Length: 487
Image 1: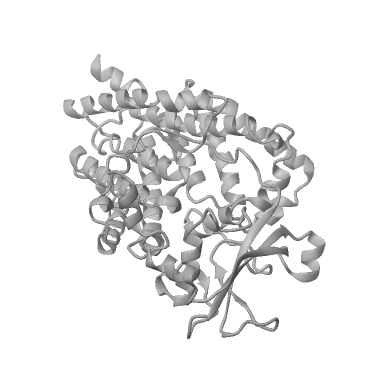
Image 2: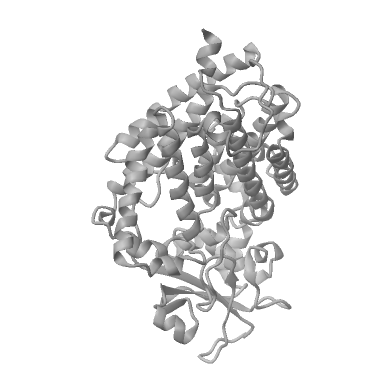
């Protein structure tokens, strides 16, 4: 009875194969991001130095390796160890030596990434960080390739997928009125954090298509999720609808690995019988898992049930908050996105000059960022599932007319005045390759997509109008700079 209830009648060997490979790819991208960006953003001398995490948090509230070892060398070693283990996960080598080794590899991946998320402060404050941790923790209990896939774990993946999708639907229908009057797509493609190469074209689709897209969004996020728990093939149909929906979001925007990982989770709605005709995998021989592993799986299910109480209460509350963790290990979280849609797009242009004395004739040269709009003639790039963390935070910062709530921004300017190579690695171009500028400033613009007629005439993807000064010109000798660089 114990074993049959654990595994059920359906088998999920191929489902596990897809889940593990997809989660492994996501981990690989996440650790590459950490290896390239964590130290200049949150390292010992980063824009938000890691000592702030250690000083302002208690270990039990934000546990992780870097709380004990807030050192750049440890950060780098952890990131590249994560990359190596992710490659083992993607290749399937992590599963080839039994359940114990499999759990060790996947458990280490989870622990390493938990350390990055809990120490990452503002730059790691995104819902897909907790989503990867929750997904990665469940993956620990999928078992090695020589044992049957526990059905209960597959259903826990479906429960995570349900909370992800249904929470997103609820936050929208309760939030911005444009979700109720079907006009959100009039603005979304243009004002989303980081448009991609097709966003301009999607923005100029007919109004009827935009209205229909909002209706589809409500159906996929508010109705389809209940079918994840239906018998086959209904559950698989719901999963396929979710995958296609996430695919459209990936085609029209850069949302890190949010949409990719959600599509991966949707594989949990399939079964081996449905996947066998399309997956060329013939080795299906599996044995019943050892009793200690079975007990661990049921303990996992019990923990998820208990930790689901607060996320469910939040999801059903009229005061629903999105993308929140209720435990320091990020085991069961609440999700949601775009409860409100911005109507205008603002961007911050950071500029510098070699002039010692500033005049009306001073020539300012702009730094260009890797993902966010700066040059109106540059086509929006495709960067997802890679995550450009500084670019995303600049999108948030530009919503306000000053950096009052974003203290890392002043430190960013200071780093540019120093010509700091680590910080410059986060940018696409440095207009001062030989010597750092004497002064920098930040200008705030309102951006909008050009019309088809404007683009045909000018070749520009964006039109922009200056709306103010975000940060007045400043030099390295300014007291604000010296203070920010001492932190």
